[in-house]
Length: 272
Image (cartoon, rainbow, N blue to C red; front, side, top):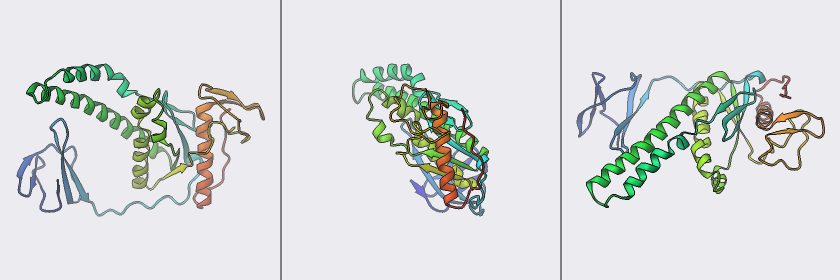
């Protein structure tokens, strides 16, 4: 339910909502600016949240118009490592759902044995919902911190456009892909970059970033997913599959930025 007007914060400890009255609330930070809209929602665990939209009067930062290639990073998404940067940094995948699978399975089995419509079934349902809520909160916390660091450290971030819906058709990897939540991470990078005046560059999903040598640009005819290291037959350069892909994504992103007149030319070094 949304309240577009007459909402007030009462002494920093409660909210006044029209037709509802004063409701106790825990504000996780001080409000800045004028309250425009408050949206109240209820989770499946019975918790109520109020999302407060404020107008602080500050304009959205203008996008950076001159980007140096040293401040551009390319990101390759994976499962063993959630993010592989063109700098060679690899961010481990926390596998949050996998780590909590045993607890979830146990609580879901208990729920399945309860009689439908009973009070005990409702209690078991709330326990399952709380377990899923903890998984979602842990994943969001990790992605918010990671996306904030990446946006703060770079002027432009280049990512590959992934067809996640098609990738989820792989029965062996579907659960791991859903747990990684690449699309949600890119969404966080997108709006944080806009707020900071930075750039998020999306690369075509059909670009063969893994099979292309970042040193001589020659392309392998085929490269199985199991090949994590490979050597370019044209120039003899040895590649880490993921870092090579991240470097190619960065180079393609720089070309797009240069086409828009936003990036200065500089030497792009390949990791051999």
